[in-house]
Image (cartoon, rainbow, N blue to C red):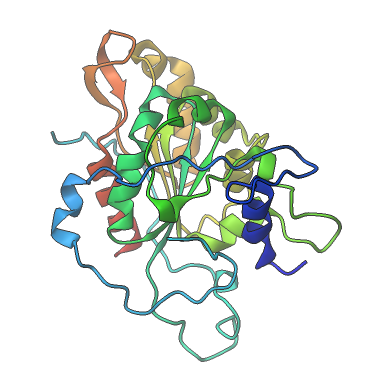
Length: 282
């Protein structure tokens, strides 16, 4: 199967518009309805931004207060790997790659801070194309949110293998790794952080991370209860991720969803987007 069919098969399998079902399960990618996404404070000055050139990559045919930044050892941002470029712009071809917007894969995990996904996606869309991958735990916090249409459908575990039927067929977590210029995991739950540190890959998000080309940046935005953040386990896990060259922003101190006051809240969406933009040099 040609790689361009991956997302097409995923969308078709969701039956969101045609009322269809598939053999894997009904509506694996459930688009979040809504027409008016929230505004990003830092994106106001970017209204009217136009692409230098429309992206013609056939693979993805989708529709349309200060933050404390944790100092984490990291690698310098680099250009996307040659294999991530379409068609003739591969290694050995002197033709320069076509001008296009940066590509952000936003991975959302099971933290209450996932309710800020729409705002974060809007901030990122001010300078980049955005795809959103979610864990099963994140789904509960996304119901009813109004996400920008160009970020839909949400990509999840149930749809990962829908387009795969045999050796040689494309695999979603590999295609996402090739497509994206940066991986932003926000919010990053304590559970997913532990998985990243141990190299586990039991869902779409962690499979992307395990297959990631670390010449391209990864940005983590942790969000959890204060005692969970202060746990020596968390310090060990963050250190392991830093050793891989991952970047980190936050968490910040405020009143948490559980009612406690302390450090553990996800960094503000505008600040996460600004940090991601800086990593891309965009």
